[in-house]
Amino acid sequence: MAETLNALERYEALRLDADAVYEAWRMPDRPRIDIAMDTSSLANGAQDTGRALAGLIASSNANVDLGQVHGYGMQWLHPTVQVTFPDGATVLYGPVRVEDAPRLLDEANGIWGAAADLRIGMIAGERDDIPSIRDHEFFSLEPRERRLTRNLGLIDPDNLQHYIARDGYRAAARMMGRHQSEEAVRNVLNEAGLTGRGGANFPTGVKWNFLFGAPGEVHYLVCNADEGDPGAWVNRVVMEGDPHLLLEGMLIGAFATKSREGFIYLRDEYPFSIQRMEHAIREAEAAGLLGDDILGTGVSFHLRVIRGAGSYVCGDETGLLSSISDDRGMPRVKPPFPAAVGALGKPSNVNNVESYANVPLILMHNAEWYREFGTERQSGTKIFSFSGDIPRVGFMELGFGASLARVLDVCGGVQGGQLKAIQPGGPLGSLVPGHVIEDLVLEPASFAPYDAILGGGGIVFCNDQTSVMVLVEMFSEFVEVESCGRCTTCHGGNQRKTEIVRRIIDGDGRREDEPNLHFIDRTIQFSNCAHGQLSPKIMRNILQHFHDDYERAVLGVDHTLTAKGLYEVVVANQRDPQLPAAVDICPTGAIQGEEGRRKVLADLCIRCGACLEVAPNAMAKQPKTARPGILALT
Ligand SMILES: Cc1cc2nc3c(=O)[nH]c(=O)nc-3n(C[C@H](O)[C@H](O)[C@H](O)COP(=O)(O)O)c2cc1C
Image (cartoon, rainbow, N blue to C red):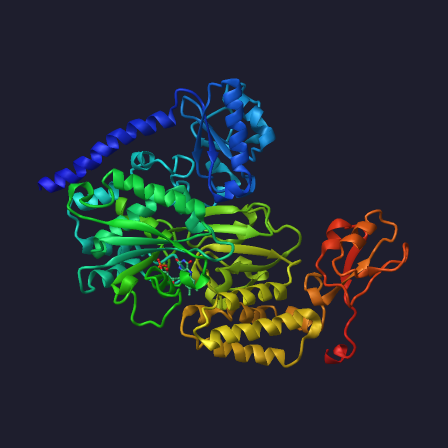
């Protein structure tokens, strides 16, 4: 019992300090400007904005501090900043560019209204008639109170004490302090219905049972932070926004599976996530929340980040385990499953970042609380990232079952045309026709009738100026290049598939291409791992749902003028003053003829687009003349 008190007492001592630090941060003595610092913000100029503000504060000796938070989700408005005033009111502004820095500083410094046009909403407290950010249309489908994303905007992600002050590590401390059994922990997850967020949806508690029951003293707990799908940045939000949530989830997982060591396999293309996670690990170790004798309980858990080298198949759990084990990063056949043979040949468990992140929340509350959101089949909430041809690119935390049509509405609808296709789940995911959007809700079962998957949370909307054939070429090349090469079915099959698609969009489609593509599809499915097995899916979706587009491409027709072999570049205006620049920039000298009678020689034009960029009014694309004989096919 002494140990019991000890663990909780130690936590409460940490909490006391943390509360004081957090209180001072939330109700600062003087206004503080927090720049949203995360990968999306950095890509949109947050560092420049931060430097401009720092320079102004220093040169004017302003009575204002600078700090950092993670962005709130409205990434089309980045870079965003928050100003927290001494009464605890926090206003969100964006986009705040370098030139906006002076008036933003004025507003923080007491000239209220100086940056009124940049205000987005209140993160905390009240001010004038500024609405709460929770009332913004973009978040109208989220639970009123966020769960996985509850700390965004309300903590500095690099500050462990902020996390603790908002109940962080309480679930872990309670579990250890009360000697909750490992089995009880796993059971709560099963009752809650938590399933893997990496795409396969396997029940997390069941997977933990496997590792708990595995023989031997050495068990490894592994986090899959490889997030390689273009259009998905769900795990990144957790790691950069609330890194201790992941660490706490893994700590609980270590306890429940008898693991004393763990790895976070994190893709090197996420340098900022790596920085945040490594910093968080050091902080947790220093506070006695990771390492040996955690909270005085005698329990040890050592965790480290392993940087992945940018191979897509290392996101597959067996490829990832090979990579961690210093073997070539190749997926392997299962069984043996990771719980039998995992990292360094020892029993292991692999879960996605978001799967672990859900665990502390479930333990803090209970299974019933978790099931308040979601559907009968799929409980809880999930973070989704939305991008593509929409004006409002960003992320939301939604209960499973949310209407995708409503999501598109709050993302501002489709821009540049009508909705053509929805691309969930990345290169191994699917391509769903836009016209079925009203039937789609965000849960895996809803996508199944379209031979589609929901995947890890990245959803890309495509307008009707997108050629689905160009899209499938991109994905086909991706899965070919990323194939590990072990199975000829996968590597050779995807190579052949890419060649056929490329030939079609180069204007040389053939009647026999379609049966050949079906044949390749059936063959690739015999590959050893899920990469190969799923790799022909998007091509199959094209033949299932976009057959007209496929047929037109075979006939040499592409109304989007993006399939390189199906359009030609012509001189549209001989008198345009930019035309000489187009002539000069053409790398193949394809624009020939004397002034006033210039024309593009089709045999030389490689359709690189350089002339269209420098002289958009002089040059134009036009559909290619149909190939002689091809019309006979119609
Ligand atoms: C080629 C390939 C890439 C994958 N990439 C990821 C990834 O980046 N992140 C992830 O969590 N799961 C990925 N998976 C799924 C994992 O193999 C595995 O199912 C998952 O990490 C299990 O965790 P979960 O049960 O928490 O979802 C990938 C699978 C394949 C076949």
